[in-house]
Image 1 (cartoon, each protein chain N blue to C red):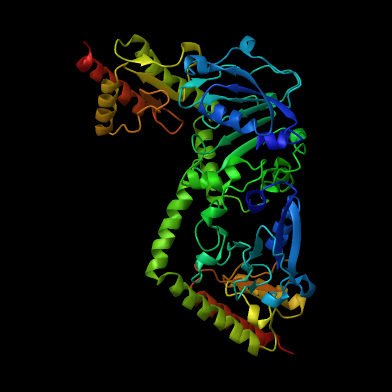
Image 2: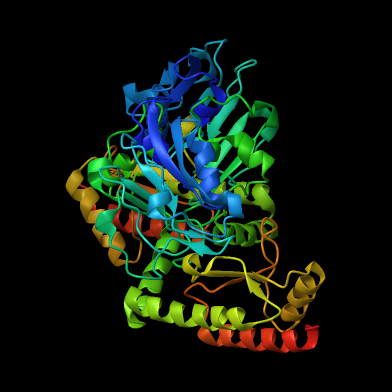
Length: 282
Length: 282
């Protein structure tokens, strides 16, 4: 939706994209159909194990917007800073780390996030938009995909997904009782530190992401031996810890510790990793 | 989505639209932005109280498709035939009467229906498409709005609204136990007949829609006196029968008797209408 809303003419607009993982790459490929896209950075040279730093970004000062994805679920990396782009509005896909920490929304033009990670069941997308960006759509932008329509109609131009919105309300109530996004930030750091501290001291497991760009939501790691990785996932599943197999693009394992994952689950996983290490070290 | 999928070039395609109510009018206005639209018929001359007959349709034999909405929720009318359009594919919005009767899907190019009337909670749209119609999209059609994407990816290009799909499965199981769509057709006719038979014999209430085009899903009626209409809705709500106020575009009352409405609810409403008539006749 972003190209169709921020580039005012089909094929004539310009935008910057930072490609740091699967979803930013899909977004980049789709955006190329709508205008001239500058790849501000691409971490594909190291299998997306890092996030480009500010001085690595090649920015177009005339871009209609700058796009990035704040957390990369498959590769387990997370932006640890907000890019400085001058007058170019920041557009950010926060699907996989929204509500995991305080965010200064005033720095962004558009934040969007699918609900299915930290908010509510799949079927709802939350958009936080600087209203001054609405009304720049292409002539071929459908009314249903025009942010201006949703602003003008209080997000009820169509029949909204009521149940998802209701559940989101319940989740937000729960989240406030846990200390809000600041509370979530403390908790996620505690959970991620348990895993990363162990990984950094393990002689069997290695973390995929470079230390300063590690995601607190998705912790990716491997033994370096596909057979051991497979055995680990199989035995973990037998103990009730499922879906640890990493995405085929990066291999190994991935532990997703979204807000809904209690710290006890992380402790149980680390205990099992230690046990597995003892049994499988050479 | 239909203009962006069936007219292969922005601004160059042609389509026929039958405007018989609110949603077909919205669809027509939006389609006009994408191509040359011929209004095959418009029942607005009689406040959408009827459906144009086959011989009233002014068809363009070169149209990319013919669009209509099979049931008009606000006006309470329903198509009682499938239009004959030669080689022009039929596209139908069945949101408000899908699963209420058997449908010969082979006669249609595209059937779509929002789930929120007869299928599942809001947030899901079901599409039945002749796959040979996919792949005709405009160059500006987003991947997410391209039926071909959804066909190629088994409707899972994006994370689907899992809970809605699960509930739809439960509803379909329930529906099969009720005799399937044939069972639903018998039930809806019984429910609608209770209301229409009473309306046709009432000296107080009058049905809005012309007899041969009456909807079995949405029964619209009025007393002809706004004050009496308001009193009726208020008293009905006190008895637990809510949302009977008609849409502001047609006024009066509207009883929606979707599949989920049991016949007991309809009987209770008719009883109250009789009681109200006795107390308010001149």
